[in-house]
Structures are given as C-alpha cells and as structure tokens.
Length: 286
Length: 326
Image (cartoon, rainbow over all chains, first blue to last red; front, side):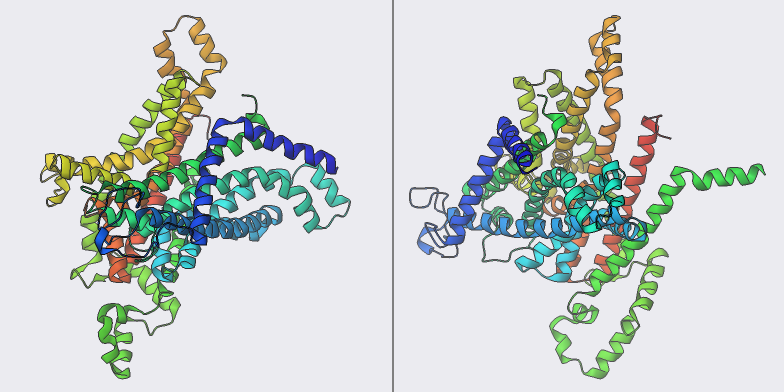
C-alpha cells in the first residue's frame, strides 16, 4: 500500500517535470519566493522606506538598480518588499479560503440535505459579485491592515474552493467502494479523510495555484485604489498608482513594479497548467 | 385541465426555476450587503458630520439616530432599506446633494456601454487569436497566441491603463478622457474616443480566457468524425472551419464570455477611475472613500443585480446555441 502510493506520487512529479510551462512557471515562482524571503530577512541594498533628497528620481544605475522614486527611495528595495507583502497577503488569504472552502465543500457534498443547501445558497450569493467589488466592500467595512485585506480576499475566494471540492465528492460518494465502506461500518470521518479527500486533491491543488494568482491581482488592485497597503509602506499596486504622474519622465517607477506583478502571475498560471497536466491522467497523452 | 398543465409546465420549466433561484440569490445578496456595511466602525452620523460628531451632545445624537432611523432594530432597518430600494429610493448622497437614484441613472449607462464595448472587443480578439492558435497546435504561431493569452491574463488592468494613459498623453498629446465625459447621444464621436482605450483594456482582459477556451474547444472539435467527413466529401476547409468547427465550439465560448462579462464589471471599477469615466465603478469607489454608506449599499446592489441578470442571460443564450440542452 505504502509503496504503491510512493510510485504514484513520483509519477506526478515526473509528469510535472515533463511539462515546459510547469518548469518555467516553477522557476519564475521560485525566483519571486526567494526575492520575498530576502526582503523579509531585510537583505536589501537599501531600506525601502529611507528617503534620500539627494537622489530624487535617479535613473537605474549600479547604486540604485531600479532607480529611485520621487522621494528618493530605492525602487529595487521597494519592489522586493512589495512582492513580499503581496505574497504574504495572498498566501494567507488563499490558505484560509482553501481550508474553510474545502472543509465546507466536502462536508456539504458528503452530508447533503439542508447543510449542503445552505452552503450552496450562501456561495451563490458570493458568486454574484465581481471579485474586486466584493473585496472592496469588505475592506471598506473591515479596514486595510494586511490581515484585513487577507480576510477580505479569503472571503471572496472561499466559494470557489467550496465548489471545486464539492463537485468530485458528489460523484465519488455514489461509487461502490464508498457504499461498501459504509456498509462495513467505517466511520464518516474515516471515509471522508481516507477515501474522499484523495479524490478532490488534484483539482484543489490546481485551484490553489490559480487562486493565488487572482489573489495577487486583487491585492495589488486594492492597493492601487488606495484601499490596501497604506503609504509609506511599499506595495506593488500602490507603487504603480504613485508612478502615474511620474511615468512619463521616470519610466522605471512604473515598469519594475508592473513587471514583478506580471511575472509572478504568469509564473502561478504556468504552475497551474503544469499541475493540471501532471495530476490529470487524461491529459498526459501529449 | 389544459390551463393547469400549461401552468405546471411553466412552473417546472428550467427558465422559471433559474429565475426563481436568481431572486433568492438577490435576496441573500441584499442581506449580505446590508450586514457588511453595518459592521463598519462609525455610522451614518460620523459619516455625515465627520470630526464634528464629537461636538454633538447625547441628546442631539439620539435625535440624529432617530432621524436616520438607526435607533430601530436591525431587522426593521433592513426592511425599511430594501422596501425603499425596491421602490426606487436608493438613498441620498450628501457630498453631491443628489439622490443616489439620480446618480445611478447617469452612471449606469456609462458602465453598461463600457462593458459592452469591452466584451465585443474581447470576444473578437479572443476568438480570432484562438482560431489563429488552434490552426497549427504546437507551432510558433500557436506559441505566440498562447503567450498573448498568458500576458493578457497576467498584466493587471491598472498597469495597462496607466501605461496607455502615459504614452498617449505624453508622447502623442492625445487624451480624450481629460475632457468632460460626453454621452453617446450628445457627441457620439467624442464618446467613441473616450470609450476606446478603457474598452480596449477591458477587452484584453476578456480576450485572454476567451482565447484559451476557443483554442481548446476548437482543438477538441477538429478531431470529431463529422469534421473529417465534411472535409472528406470536399467541403472547402474555410467553410468547415467556420460552419462546422466554430459553430460546434460556441457553447464553451458563450459560457466563458458570460462569466467574463460579469468580471468585467469588476474591472470597470479600476478602469473607470484611471480614465475618469463617470460610471458605477467610480460611484462606488468615491462613496467608499467618502464613507457614504447609503450610496455604497445601493450601488453594490445595482452591480449584483446586473451580474445576476447577465448570468441568466448567458444561460438563456446557452440553451439557444445548444438545442441539446432542454
């Protein structure tokens, strides 16, 4: 039993490494994670908050790799610190959404009846808003500390996880081996964890990668609108917003933060594609 | 007898069920919107008086609470809000001195026009690039098409908008959105120029998923037997491409477009701000920054109604396109 599991897992990694987009995505994502860890440890060439009046709007140079902004702050350090903040908010949000969403989705699909109905109805309500608008409304009522932004994004993306987890449960629970387990008298928690959870694993892993990319876009969108990270703290969305009046003569203030958002979102999407191919046997043909 | 069976058929028809469930969803949305904006620290009084709230004595605060109706139990407040909302009373915006209904009447057409232009541009670009890509899967042109899809998905609308505004305004000294907004019935040419760039930004966001869906749907249909038969009996390739392949791939494309149309309403919030379009998105955003909760509440509700309506319409079109779904 244990041996078989090992083989199938090695299989997934093997298939993942065969997909070009999966490898490119993993490299891009890894780069962003390393960069964020550097920012978190404070390994930056300059303090992201330090203003330097002698170096206002300095073009990229060997001292300021990405140039400086209109306060003389180092754009390179700020971009890295912004990436760290974006990833922190998004990873927290998606973890929260995934844990709550998967639990509710599996329970709803497995238990059915009124419990399932309430969950489906409530997620329908959340699905009836464009994500950024829902996040806006929630942030407006919660506040804009990083954990409040996270919570708002988590609320927005929880229904997606409910839906993704619930679907496979509905079809799996009617299968003979589940019925047999039930007749054999296995407890519900055991059936849920040992037999149903592995079946929802693949779509959920893919969903986590995609949701992370959406969460990063939502977070930077909120910051851009002034409802996320507050100045003087660095955030990619806020940096793009600050660059609006400067971009015409100081392109670096706009280009670098934009590039970082794009790269991390591209990376996550490619990872999602790679995972989908690796985890879905039907797609392995090519 | 006949009347009853017609009624029964109507009652159990999928369209009816779809609409009934949409109404329950809207009811849930209204409760949610109401509750979310109740959690906000401070209330209508601090919103209206700002820092001067501190100067009010308890007697005045009690009177104001009574005046705004916030001394009532929550459930009463909810019903008073929802019944006035349904009768067209969306509340009052203190900053502009106008009713939210009057504001919405001006703002809503802007957002709807923008959303339509964005969707049309997005569908055209998405289907065209999807077909272009699917023609030779794995080729260099397919790579180009897929790269477009990926970048369109990954570059946020606000980055694209900021870049367009910077380039157009500074290099070409052309920025129609800095002038006063013109409705299409007042100055169609000006309106077109003002809608063009924000529409393009939204269109690119829609094009990405439409392109991906088109590509995979086409590749799936191309392998079907009826396509091979059509080609085999000598139908011109171009005709097969459009009449057989594209037509049969339309269902996922229509569904994806419907979903995207909804998200585009969200994108409108950001794009309207950057391009200074006086639409619903800007209305919500300004209301949030000014802490005018009556305006936020009613505007968000209008957004949700649009979204739900679009979902129903997508469903209906979907049934139309695919006769197999009954």
